[in-house]
Image (cartoon, rainbow, N blue to C red; front, side):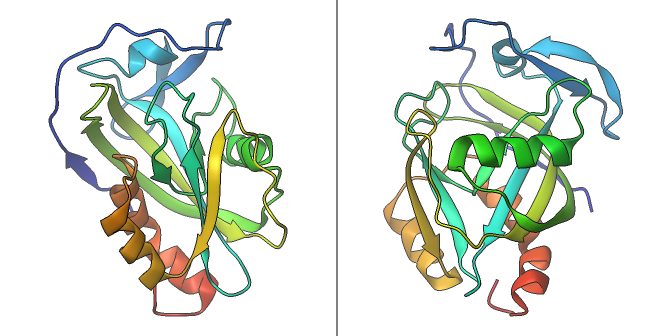
Length: 200
């Protein structure tokens, strides 16, 4: 199921991407998710934003708890904010499932089990701090994790396993990425099915 949400925010920023020396290209798409071309990563996130392909991973442990990550403070986008297990952008031509599995391994040292597609969601959010724009056609994936995360400190500052009640408490106490509420709401049916519980 695809839904659309839109939030406003401040204008563009002039920022470089620290630590990234090579140009990183994202896959641009139309409203139906069909590839239309490529764009450099930072330029695609500057206002007004260009619709591009992304992915979001949600992994549950055997107790039905969701693995969250707090983004490293060195990240150019949303540093220090909590978010879902893993998120990112496929390389041009890379299948979203393959990109999701690859980045989960790179960021968290994990190989997801039973990971499956959980739909797509389309959104347009602006980060209130940086002004960077998230205009994404996001492929959602839900799966199981049975190992302890071994996060790359350049990517992830902290991890936590939370049940639904703990997540709601954390959301009142800590800051989350601007896209997190949208992707969480979209993936909830898959989490309920995966955990065999109505809690999510």
